[in-house]
Image 1 (cartoon, helix red, strand yellow):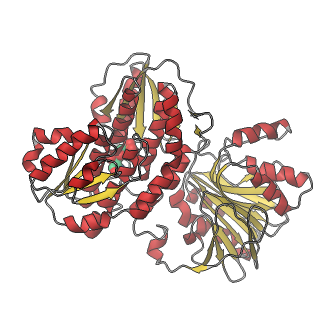
Image 2 (tube, rainbow, N blue to C red):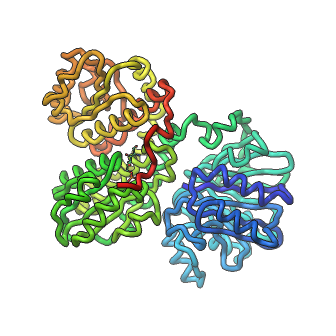
Image 3 (spheres, rainbow, N blue to C red):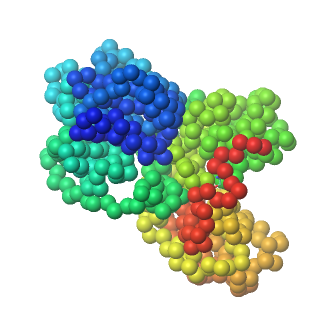
Length: 601
Ligand code: M6R
């Protein structure tokens, strides 16, 4: 996820309007930033690091960039580490076309190969660089600027919000597919951005672009067209947000925003990695797997719950696998040999316990792999291999979208390591449908009703069996982390071995049960046990299981592949935790005593 902006009609203020806009978009990515301002020529400036690094560099320039139009970008790396060269805007060889992009161009490798054959050279590792080069090729072939942009965009597969500026042209060209892009209508000026706050200081009148639409924007006019070039009449909307809300894209908290970003996060995690036609998973970052090996996961907190899930997937596929808490593994590692792959699951890639466990494993001769969200993080640099979950930046201390993206990416890794078969072919359509299923959970959840009924209860228990066990643990962790109320997660069959003594009418039990069969049947038995002690039961279920007959409340999830039901069930529990914390007026985004990245052991 990245933040993009384009402005037309700001005269001498172009640079400051672009930079101010970028500062409100930094929540979308902050590992590098860049701008391009255009008049008869392009003036491009970009730097690795936070926006402030770019701002300082521009302040030092005797001749800061000027132009009637300008574009800007703040980056969250997906292809290539955060460096000056990989920062956006990207340009063509002659320096006529500059492009800022948010999304992932899935067919960039093929396009690069095609362009290279025509003699085009590339300087960055990014997927984006093909875009200005395609547009330049069309210009060279005689196309006018607008046609050249369309022809370039027509060749792209994947997700994109793009803003393009061309030297000598006072218009901006924009296109959208699966990544947000909004147009702002000002007084003698127009704006394009990933999110409204980027131009809210200048206008509240906005037009939301849809997938497949193009926009041509100048200081005093804008035109939106569909993929065929036919004009689309768009209605503008007046946004009425408070300044405080804007950095959160209109949500009250980053946590809620990030919960709602999950369909997009999952699309990014999956982008270009599954092929529905040949029924295979491809992870470009990793070597072709050799013989199945022993796999040990190390992780902490929420990432440990993802690791438990990943290990269970591999065991189901016949690969010996286990998950350990990083802090334990670091001082008491499991035996490793040269055929052991140790996988560190870490959103930040900076958790001291996990780095320590990975170093211990590496020193003992194991091969290491980081499954992380942060390109260029310590874990990514120190491990032999890195696999990115591509969730985009997560600001709230409580992990939400990164957990979902970890579960999805671990499914891909399990297929990669275990050898792909007919099971992979069956999993892929369900994976590709998962973002829509998750959206349905967000649209239909009745978590607030559940929360209202159980405000003030003494303790909250979460149970699940098999792949739902990590979800029960994660549901309880999220709940206590942001509500400060007591919560515990258990394997469903374990409750009766002690904790049942605490179960009363004052202790709601959240039971995650989907599908039918032995596991679901046994968990329903555990539900009856708690119900017999008077505990209210909330079933998180897909409607296939008959658990709803015994439940006081049902939090429904769509039916899906049994391996993916935990992803959807977890979203309901995220919403329960969020709304309970909100009712209790807790500090949701920064819970007491906690930090986003725990860099001490
Ligand atoms: O960055 P990591 O995934 O390595 O962080 C590990 C834990 O500190 C983290 O998952 C923590 O438990 C979550 N922020 C809790 O929501």
